[in-house]
Length: 166
Image 1 (cartoon, rainbow, N blue to C red):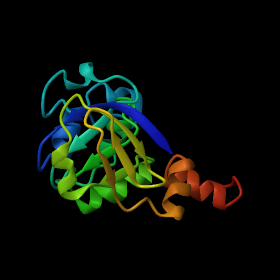
Image 2 (tube, one colour; image 1 turned 30 degrees about the horizontal axis):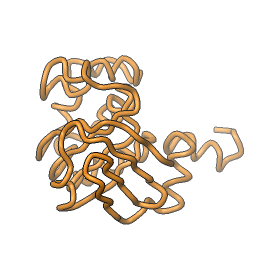
Image 3 (cartoon, rainbow, N blue to C red; image 1 turned 90 degrees about the vertical axis):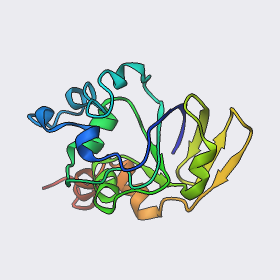
Image 4 (cartoon, rainbow, N blue to C red; image 1 turned 180 degrees about the vertical axis):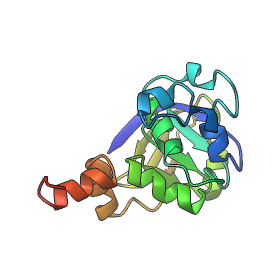
């Protein structure tokens, strides 16, 4: 899984209420949620995003309440991958469960700026920064989690494993 896009940088401790405020939790439709992605952080933020762009965050991204709507909103906004210094544990799990790949970059995230152009290879754990020429190598996503992502998340993965039933 390889993604190339422009970086949209957010800071540390971005909680799920900032990603998708509670007033928009009346649906689970990713397209509808995506229209309000990051509305709790900066109203109109999603208007700057192009399909395929990459969200890059600081520490503890996705903290706060356990809300599957948050990764769905990110996917619905057209963002296919999130990179961060670190993720809140429950968001990390919810992201993969909903089909959103996440890579922890640690301190290397500080070398990425808003507007940089990146290519992210989730399978290999390589982030190439076209704006600086730098490459960041991180732990690639484990094979079973890649299968889950390719199936569109946990529900799709389970359906495949059960032979289409469920």
